[in-house]
Length: 286
Image (cartoon, rainbow, N blue to C red; front, side):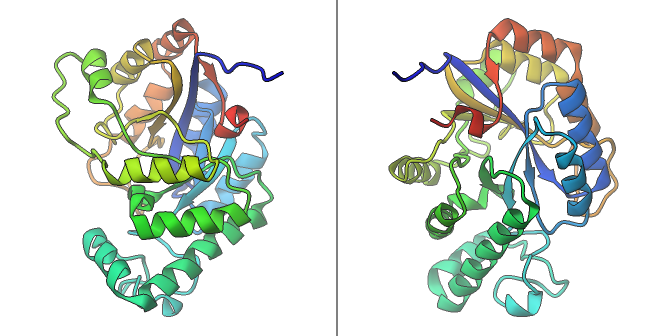
């Protein structure tokens, strides 16, 4: 007999785990003292080794793979990725043009497939269970990238994937003055990814919160979202850090305030009142 799932299930994720010591320290603090349940690891970022040490000391923290396919450090040597990297050896930042190149140029697709596989291999080498997969800047919604991630991920035990769709109604209920508009509405590609993920038997959240307010998830906003949490599986993701000023940081992001949102008494109280069961994706995968 199958045990019924709780009505409200919540995964609270930090992206960019491994980006800097400030991010890693915030992940540890938010998990130990706050509501954070999962983190997405950038396997080749400057502080990835420090992130791995912290993750191993936090057995209840669920860790997934944050694929880096734009604007950060590749896993393969840049010389092996001439179509994907820039003069500084980083993955290209011109995301729209890169997406077009992937559609039009076979060498770019071959290099992309090799890089995706290398990042899955690097995660496997950590020895950590793979809780979930997503991508920097949500680039995995690109249909070509999505196909590669779904195919390669199956070889590495991928069981859950982020589908970045955020209902604007919950934002307005959480903050009545909010006018989120169409910010980061990733349909229809996210809808296609959801259909492909479910066809592959993967767990995907019913909704993802943190898109429109990315980098501006204040304690008040997070508590408001938790007070209006719908039934089903929700992923709430943030970008905490103890402070800014590190390579790769996003301009204008309120990193310390997002850490505060994860540890605030208001957030913890709202989560308790919601009745939601929290964990990683692997805790909810059937």
